[in-house]
Amino acid sequence: MTGKEIIQKVKEKVCSSITQAASDSDTGKGKSKMSKQIKHGYHLVEGKSGHAMEDYVFAEFRQVDENELGLFAIFDGHVSREPDFWTATDAAIRRAYRITDSTILEKAKDLGKGGSTAVTAILINCRKLVVANVGDSRAVICKNGVAKQLSIDHEPERERDTIENKGGFVSKFPGDVPRVDGQLAVARAFGDKTIKDHLSSEPDVIVETIDDETEFMILASDGVWKVMSNEEAVKCIRQIKDAKSAAKRLNEEALARKSTDDISCIVVRFA
Image 1: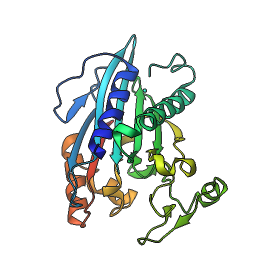
Image 2: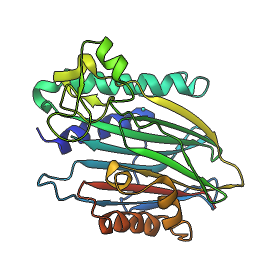
Image 3: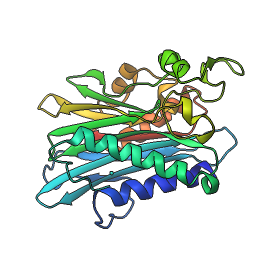
Image 4: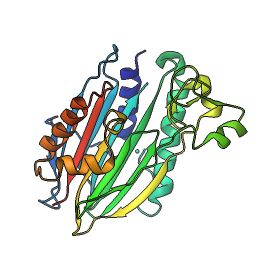
């Protein structure tokens, strides 16, 4: 089964896990009902790597009881309704990541040997932003024109000791970047059963408060970050008020800088 189909399984897990509410039509943009200022938009570009598109984007506002959740996620291929979500959000998200990884591994016979990185962001009642990630898809927020990275790039070299303590190794052969067991260029991911003993799926989770200084957030796959810094990405779209247009512009700039990977981008405007 292809990387795209693996991501579809992840999509089903994420979409059904928070609530069973029906999705709005897929227009590439949306807005909060709680705050008229908060809007999102996304854009995807298939890369030139000779395989089918392996990125998947999810972006939607949903009502859950008396609360509003903004759910944003990017999965780059290669939340169950937790009872303590409101009181222990960090633990609930970590558990959701573990469940997703376990589900993919259990179905490896049907899904194949591949896997996926992920960056997810949950906006709770327009104020509390909870970002989690595994791999090298990234979340960056802009406050007063200043870029702040909210995710952690899980690079094999940074986690070499952990990988080696599990019996694995980090090597640049074959290729020109460090890889876990010479295969995977990230130290954390969903799936990848053949090297799972040496690969983590534990996310880093960061909580950020949305205030009057917060302008927008970017979630993007590594097709953007391989060719642009956080500061360059923020500067590129800061003056574009329409979130979908901003996401498209960022992808166009990545293509102009010769990015050949699949490129996915979500922009959430707070002001």
